[in-house]
Structure formats: structure tokens, C-alpha cells
Length: 325
Image (cartoon, rainbow, N blue to C red; front, side, top):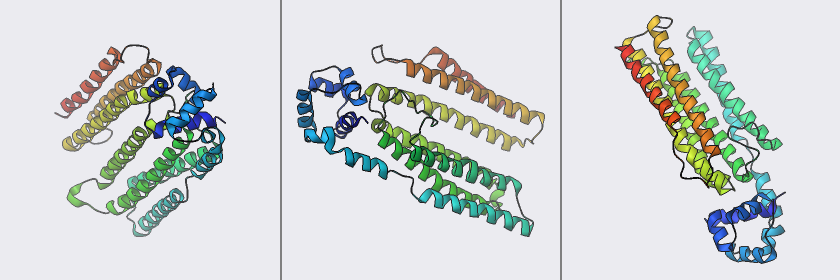
């Protein structure tokens, strides 16, 4: 266990001090601070005294006095019962909707599929996946997690708990609304489709926001933190492109009254998929450039390849308007 390194990183962040500022205060290189926090090296006795003075804690707290407290804090981070309660309510809603529709002859298959997907492949699976990760201390399969990066694992666990609890609550809420809304024909609007659309926006948007807020707390190495911050604008642009493309697709489909399995519908769908492919290729390629970027190099610049992919995506989405004309 790298308790000393974790404590140094924790106290440094609590004080709002960057690795560069700490290195400047300690009169050492930033790489030396990184090695302390990752556990590959340890500060000398003199440096331990300077650290304790800077952080306002006893040397013993840095070395061992807080070990039990830190371990207890980590152990206290758990999913709790709330996500399971939301899952149970969602399953009850799905079952009740199915039985009510069968008995009254008003079962809407499309609505049933939507709430089933939200309740099981999304809500229940995510809860099982995150709960298992916390229980077994295994985060290798979580998107964005890299074994070579030094994380503040306590903050990673808190982030997973926050995401899981939010998805659980929102999923149950929208499942209930979809069940009620499916029997409403207000203004001839497809209530189910609209609610599913807002559900996706809510879930994806909140996950992005929670991850963004946790960046400074999750990463112990300042280089990893800066790379993570660089990738966020690229991620936001990617999600906005997908959102805009989907909205244009839905508007053209509804306004022109296209029917499924018709040539115009296939053409419109093909253009949307093509735009998403361009956006996705540019997104992953630029994220790879961010990961390979070094602080020792000049300021990070967006690649021409990413700009071309972005323009091709925009052109694809604009073309959907002409299909609808």
C-alpha cells in the first residue's frame, strides 16, 4: 500500500497546491513529487518535516497515523441500498405495465421495449457492474480507467457511487413517466420517444458533468490531470454533434412524415450514421493524440485530421435538411 504517497497527494489537493507549486516549495523537480505520490520513491526526513509544516499535520500522520482512518474511509464507500431499491421499483413498473396492458388490451410493444431496456440492460446491469467493481476492487473494465495511471482510488469509488445512484434514480423516474405518458395522446406527440430522448440526454449529460467535476480529485499526477482536462472539450463537442444530428434526424422524419422501410427513411438514416462515424473517428483519434501529448512539448493543438472529421460531420448533418426538402 502506498499510504505515504496517497497522504501527500491528498493533503496537497486539500490545500489546493499543484505538483509544480509543491516542487517549487520543496526545491525539487515536479517528477520527484510524482514519484513520491506514486510510491516509486520516498521523501527524505528533511523533506518530510517540510511537508508536515506545509500541510499543517504531524509527520506521523503522513507516515502511519492516518492509515487506519484512510482504510476505514475507503471501506465506507459503498453503493448502499438505494440503487437496489430503485431497480426493484423499476422492475415492478415494467411488470405492472405489462400485466395492465395485457388485461386491458392496450399494451404498447414499443413502450414495453423502451422501459425494459432502461430497467435491465441499463439500470440493473450498471448497478451490478459498479457494485462488483467496488466489491472486488477491480476497475479494469471501466471506461477511461488505465492501470498505469495513479488514481486517488477513494475518489474514484465516490464517483462510481454518485453515477450509479443518479442513473438509478433517473431511470426509475423516467420509466414511471413513460408508463403514464404512453396512454396520453396530447397534441399527437410521441410522448414515449420524447421521454426516452430526454432520458438519454439527462443520463449522458450528468455522467459527463460528474466526471468533469471529479477530475482534480481523481488524478494524483498533474500530467494525467491536465490530459484529462484537455480531452473534455473534445468529448463535449462530440456529444453535442451527436445531439444535434439526432435532433435534425427526428425533426426531418416528423416534419416530412417519412415512414419506416421507405427509401427516404433509409437515405436519411444512412446520412446520420455516416455523420456519426466521422464524428466518432475524429473523437477517438484526437483523444489518442491527447494521451500521447507531453507537457514538455509545445501547447497542445487540435489536429487537421480532427478538423476535417468535424467538418465532414457538419456537412453530413446539413445534408439531412436537403433530403427533407
